[in-house]
Each structure stands twice: as structure tokens, then as C-alpha cells.
Image 1: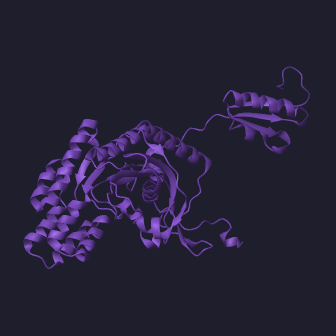
Image 2 (image 1 turned 180 degrees about the vertical axis):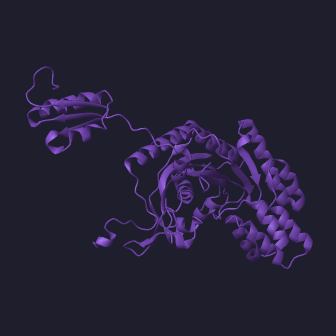
Image 3 (image 1 turned 90 degrees about the vertical axis):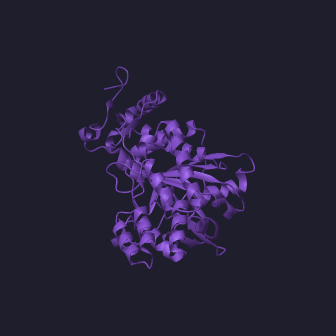
Length: 394
């Protein structure tokens, strides 16, 4: 191997050192336990999937997919998200057993990066999918579970923005007429480039009234009052139905006692094209990206031959690590150092301590050059040196 690449990693890949690993493991454990307490069952899917199924259904940009060929010439992808693989499993094996399904996952996903830019190409994602329940209660449940999980981590402030993709689609269709025009505006919204959005709207060949509608659309943020404003901007039943769903959702979130975490943002869109209704993002202090997102996707399972409504969310473990801020405390370790003639005693002593639930490091003294440096990280130290005299410790 070239020495140039001996210590390098592919673009966007990360090493996780022990202390950070322990913190991530603690975060996972707390969230997993909370998800299980809400009746969600964990599932695993393979890291490799077929490009023509999960790869295309995932809604991740093609240039972000890691692709490779198997021995039969089929194109495979490293899973770019978990929603599409779980939809595949649900459609193939689980929906026939029970509906609705409450599934959870904790897994690595992979999205290729063109350049470093601080973005991870492999990251841990933990989340849930509620499949087969078309009610707004299901949307409220996954949001409430997300809030409960974040509170378990000790987070105090994590604002949640909620929108409705059908409202955006209906408004843009009414005013712009073509998908091409709508997609340009959606891109500005996704990038949160509101200056670019406004400048683009001013250049469109529209009436002054329609231009103002598009500009006023950006102001639809806040509490329930913005839903009244939204109703005055849009025509037709589909747009009004979307607003009504948001009203129902807010009433349910009040019942859960979590409405204080929520605000509406009717301009919210996603790069995940499979969303069909309510969608949301959650943020945390000191983190520059959403730490999680989710929403309703009622058409995705049709790509796998089954019709079923679904909703869910996913949280990014790397961003949660930033949000939590504090690394896990190092667990105390009992260190036992021994010389060769007392090796058996030391091994037996270590085994006894481990039976009591202790973490034990067993170290041959001949392999330690600086004993003080080695024992500085040990909570307790036992030496087994020379001949046994009075109970094993010297």
C-alpha cells in the first residue's frame, strides 16, 4: 500500500475512538429502550441492497449512492437510508401478519460525498416506522416518541418544525402550473435560500397577486395562527385538507403535552421525494443541521407491490452526540498486574471480579514499561508479584 494512503480514509468516513463510542452506545441504549417501551420492535436489514429496488426507491440522489456489481452483474448499493429497506421487508414478509406494524432500527447508512466539507459519508441512524396506520394519530405518536426519546437524553431545547408537503405541492401547482417551475422553487426552500427564492419569484412571469402569494408563503411560520393565514393563500379542497390535518395533529400533540416543542413551517420541504403529507425536522442548540427528520410516506410501499400508509422518523447519532455535548464518564476498571509465577492466582482473581460485574484488565508485568503510567487510568489496582504469601496481593 502506498504510504500516502496508509493513514487516510475514504472521503466522508470516520473513525470512532473508544470514549466517543461509549457515549454513542449510551445514547443508542437510552433511545432503543424508549422505543421498545412504546411497543416498537427492532429489525435489521442487509447493508447491501439491489439498486433497482431499494436504491431507486430511497429517493437519495443517484450520485450519492455507493454502487458495486455482484458476480452475476447485478448493480448493488450500500443502503442510503433505512426507510426504503424496511418498506421492502414490510411489503414482502410482515404486512400479511399484522397491521399496523411498529418497527424500529439502529444502523449505519451510506451516502457518497464529492468532497469532505465536514459531511459524513457513513453515519448511524436510529428511528421508527409506523406502517399500516393512516390516521393522524400515528403521525402524532411518532413525533411524541421522538420528543420522549430526546428528553431521555437530557436535552431541554429541541424545536420541531412541522409542514405538509401536499400543501406546498398544491400551492405551487395552482400558481406556477408546471413541475419544472415548482422544482426550482422547492430547491430554494430545501437549501433554505430564502433570498434566492424571493429574487427568483420576482423574475417569474406571473401576476403581481400571484407573486405576492408566493412571497407571503414564506411567512407561514409559527403557531396555530399561521394555519389561518395558509388557508387564505390556497384554493381547492386538497390544500384545505392539508391544513385540516395539521390542525388535527396539533390538537393531538397538545394531548401528549408536547405542543411547546412544536412550531409550523409551511415552507418546509425535503430532498426525500417519497413524503406525501405531514413532515417535520427537529433541531438542537449548537448543531448546524437538523438532528432528525421524518414524515408520512403513503406511496412508498407500492414500489414493493403492497399498498400501505406509513409514517416515521430518523435521528442522526453523530448530530445527537453534538447536541448532548458531554462524553460518557469512563467506567471504572480494576487493573491486576502479575508476574509469571503468580499468573494463575491473578487469572482466578480477575475471573472472580468479573463474576461480580466488575470490568477488569489483566496485565503481565513484563509487558509494562511504565507501571505508574499504566495504573493512572485504573480505579483500583492489585499486584500479584513474587511468591504467594498472605492471600494473593503483594
